[in-house]
Image 1 (cartoon, rainbow, N blue to C red):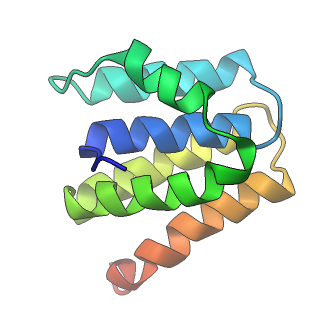
Image 2: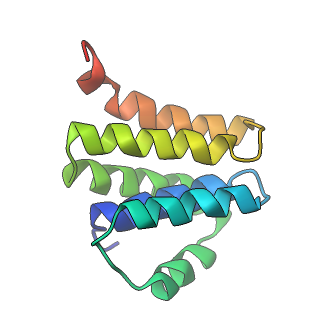
Length: 120
């Protein structure tokens, strides 16, 4: 898999978070749009990225999510990761329900990045 820059990695993680419960809520789309607007000036081909994600088998979501999480980590600061965690929480709560699968992915993010937030 090709390494994703931090904006693409964040986009991939948010799209996967929007899909793990099996339903896409319009409020989730707003979170993604806000993330992309706030990530300006970074640009990438959304059609290409959406093609990758729409062809990703559900059983590969968690591995792809982890790869994107690691790519994002490598290219980001603590502040950028904190901001992204806020987007991730907004994403899973956009439909006002936190499913078991969404919680699994969210915990993965928090546990992977948690040591650096101690004492913050």
